[in-house]
Length: 194
Ligand code: SF4
Ligand code: SF4
Image 1 (cartoon, rainbow, N blue to C red):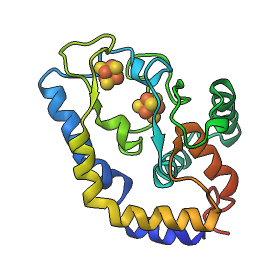
Image 2 (cartoon, rainbow, N blue to C red; image 1 turned 135 degrees about the vertical axis):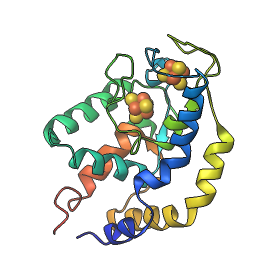
Image 3 (cartoon, protein in one colour; image 1 turned 30 degrees about the horizontal axis):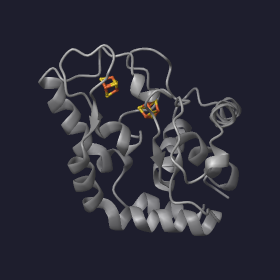
């Protein structure tokens, strides 16, 4: 097993590290500030420029590995296709807009569990009721900061271990570039036993 997995499995789980953000989302929904009726344009090139850390990419990979229908070849093709379409590798380290490969184009269109998706996605919430196409939504920065403070030591340990072990030269990349880089460089990622 890769060494970073030892640390990864010792720190709070992906679900625990997202619980405060998911509680916030539930509170918003209770007040009719919900994403449920929205087409999800925040996941498209019109407004999405999400960048994630190595541990967030690992959380996503772990989510897919545990999914019955997981198809590695299909996932790699999808990631590569998005990277090519939006030229994301050539802009490594720079924020660029792109349509997320995990967006289905429908309402509630994210295919990643709320317990595994990027922190920034969970904290991006509506400011108006009954939205069908978000225009005034925003990132709840204080919630992100509070979450980060709580888990930063644990997550830094994992991020550094992944970077050192896989030889990554980045701290954050677009979602598809980050996930694909971990898959390509992490020969242990998908077997857990080498
Ligand atoms: S991970 Fe999900 S919520 Fe985040 S940008 Fe992609 S489709 Fe949207
Ligand atoms: S309401 Fe806003 S945050 Fe929610 S899915 Fe729509 S655009 Fe995204």
